[in-house]
Image 1 (cartoon, rainbow over the protein chains, first blue to last red):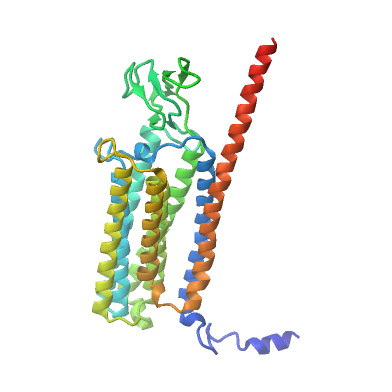
Image 2 (image 1 turned 135 degrees about the vertical axis):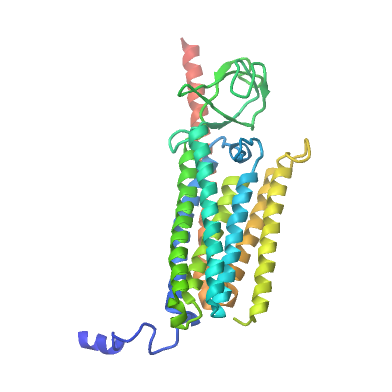
Length: 281
Length: 124
């Protein structure tokens, strides 16, 4: 039985994919990259399922235009601008990656190295932007995976005390978001009076937003950021290999560059959906 | 690949321009719909969401088919990758409905609790 199996499968010392046509007319490495990316899509889908289910299970959710509205240099209340810049950086790096692959098809070593270096710079810029965004959320706004100071009003009301950027007597409407600011290391939940509805006239304090928001945000953007980080590391290694002439010797049109290109575009693709779900909707 | 070097270069440039334009359109549409650009002008939530999702799917198509060269792979490979992905998209949508159902149950329990506490108060 055992000898039959060996006979059926042939000589094990032969290179892979020998003795027949390539499945799907794709090389072993490229095909496996596609299936790795598919399995990675499953992981991201797990995160996005958790996000969708939890978000829809909450009566209110922090409005993204309010949460993500700061820019470096002390600029505030500019919704979506910073994250749009991040999206453009990643898209641009995807384009430079395509160019690197195309130069590889031409067996043009200098072209490959040039465009790959530009891709690496794009990846580093994206990581820098994300570092700034996380620093602002954690350091200035005090959001953690367990504490979410971003909430959304569920009723109209009037503030009864002065806050960081609101004054006593200011009114607010249901559906708008707020941030509970910290004073001397403590969160200060402002008191307000309900303006209308069955509970009109009652005095309440601002409540923390859905707890899951912080954890979902940090885990999903963090997992994506980790992909960008690993991508930059791999790009760097492959760029150095290309520069050393390793792929030139292989005479396979820089297939390694094509494979890391697939990975890099996938990272961009995931960002399209993170951008949609976290920032646009 | 079926394209000459110059043709591929042109396709890549065109694709990145379209991707950039769609991204700008998405942001402008989202900000207009939520009333940031024209004062007092709002669009219904389903319209903003629907348009955003369609534009993102177009972006995904361009990235997968042009940048990742899925357009030039054999149909069987395309199917083995895209069919599982589409099932995942279905799972994500299905679970948002599940989430709404949790919210519904939670509100129901909350209302029941508050109505029984009122009854207790009346009995005293």
